[in-house]
Length: 90
Image (cartoon, rainbow, N blue to C red; front, side, top):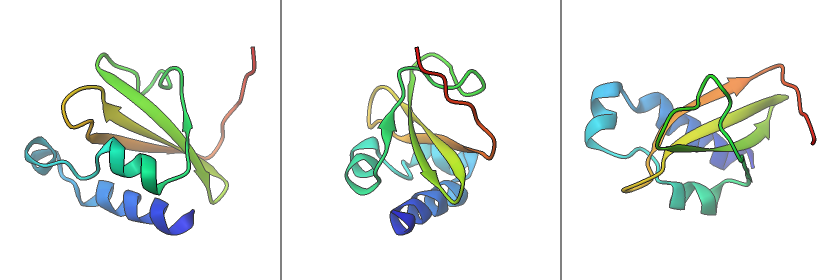
């Protein structure tokens, strides 16, 4: 799992805001095939906004949340890592 995750993180790091408007660093279809993940019913509050969905992975004692656009190419828009997190189960 480490190598595909590092590839995805590298693609996010290379994407500048200007470049992200004209190209898609990673589509959800490619992410889904390459990176083991879980679907999130809702994005974390600090990442939530209309027209996006989130997926989560774990690596290196952190949780990594990937934010994708819900329409068009379903491009990766951003990614955030959390070192401390809380899991709640209903």
